[in-house]
Image 1 (cartoon, helix red, strand yellow):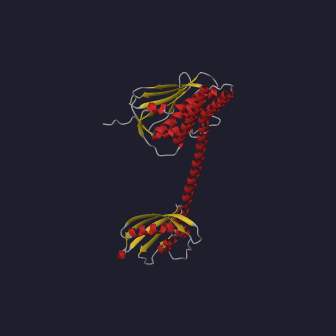
Image 2 (cartoon, rainbow, N blue to C red; image 1 turned 120 degrees about the horizontal axis):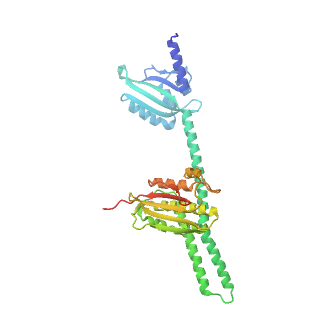
Image 3 (cartoon, rainbow, N blue to C red; image 1 turned 180 degrees about the horizontal axis):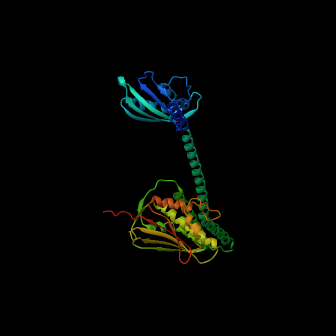
Length: 374
């Protein structure tokens, strides 16, 4: 049976400090010349072991941006006892910077001097890893923003295509009417009125899309849920026409008012109808239908649902449909439903999916009723 000698224990302690990048120190305030640095402190600070240990030498190496903060903490600590924790950057003699976490226990020594016993922990590797993780997260955020911009550009192109095509058709009709031997002036006026109406419609689309995609703080107001649907009917009807589907509203009367950010909720509704229209368009079949319903929940809130009679979702897709960047469309970004879910979570609601009967998909969410004013 072997016994451990003091020398062995010191070697083990020294090795443990090297592994943990942790050194220990002792010094007194005011400085009485009796100071101690373990070998690992010298290695952390990059100081030659022949240099006598001194806490002044540590302060000299503290990064200029951290020095005032550390000195202020020490000036407060030396008036009493207890514990002191500091995090700072130390600039070695060769210019390299180390991140250090220092912890001290302060007590009174004979003569009322302050005795500080503590540890210096080199956390440079951890800080470097954290910074690398932050940079990676920032790059992912940039990718997300670029993907969102692509989704926005696709949406704007899709939404504006209908009124612009209508304007072109009416303009060509005017040309034909003007080329006639006896132009039909009333018909030309009607065509010009239709051109103006479609131009206004395109402007409304741009205005609404701009409001929906603009980054802004949530602004909740008390509104009627049915009005939120009616106010975006221009966008919804365009999607329905593009997919050659019927759009039907089943809006329950006498619903409670809701407290929401109206523009954000409209974005959710437009996203759901747009997805339903694309699902119906992918089948190439006729008889497609999209139904928007509102209803009062047993808890007194408002439920909004969008149902289509398209092909529905495969079981595997249904389980992942709300994941960012997951998409079943060849040119999709997989952000529409993820953004919608995020918006609803901000309203303390959840976006849910369930199969429709006899076929298709149904997406639904609940809006909180506005508190009644006494």
